[in-house]
Length: 120
Image 1 (cartoon, helix red, strand yellow):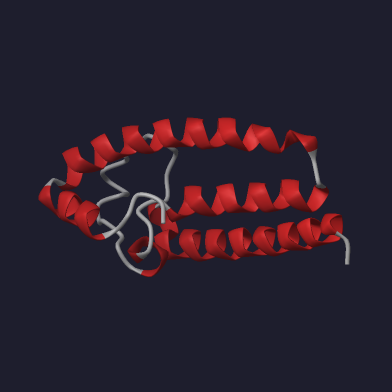
Image 2: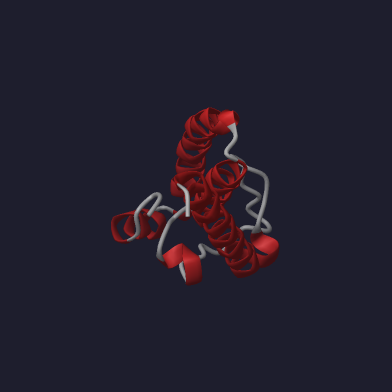
């Protein structure tokens, strides 16, 4: 098997891992899921810390990054560098969300931050 085939095969695997992690994350969050860098206190009134949220404070973003990296590797696309822009942009969204979650959930979120990593 050639290196090119191995990269493509690995990319397909990462794509599936990202997709499975994304579905698990979204189903765990259920109807509490909202727009990035926003917080709807009426709907998002409980901090979710189970399932994939016990592994990462941001499993939805992590899974999307894994999916895109895998997809670009599977296609062996020269656009894989765009994933870096997505990661940079996502990091800034996460930082904004952390401020909102600290404000809304206070010590509960700060304790969660000490137990669970931001990414993986």
